[in-house]
Picture 1 (cartoon, rainbow, N blue to C red):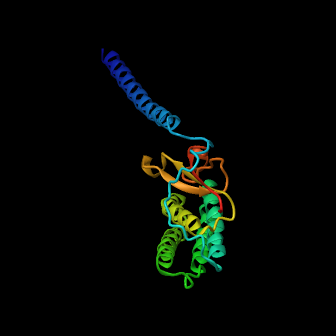
Picture 2 (picture 1 turned 90 degrees about the vertical axis):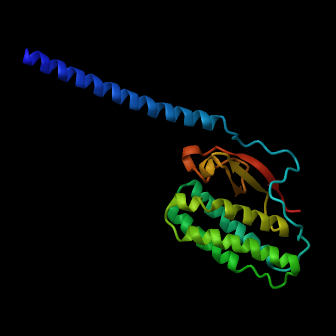
Length: 214
């Protein structure tokens, strides 16, 4: 009788364990499925935005002469290398690139600018250096990605305002970045290569604004 009760107890315990494990697995599978469905419902692809669409509004200082345009272009080029290494999820290279962005921003000479031109340039260069400096202090790719949107907006704003684009630039957006708040980045390629998620969601995103040097 005792043996029968013991076997019955063990069988009941085993069944309870299996049911609990299955329930947990089902919850995990459901969460993964919902996340995938959420992603699939988001905008993504390489389609171009409506002609003339503007996301980042800037003043027009394209008539400015002097080395400032070339100096801002150097900031953009350093930014693009940084962005590419975030796509590759290479925190060490991104850290080195962030230092290069800071160095390029520090070389931008605003002394020849006047009034609002100078104020605008100083504000955006300050944001570039702030974000890039934080990225340069970290070897955590997620922490680096957390500074990317501010860096992207400031870099794009400088480029547009002073007409410093040496190539066509695409302002791209991922709706799932920043805890589903969405975030932007800048690219020289219309194909989506997401720097916020890398290989995990490489093509998640859309082109929101296209800018070519006037």
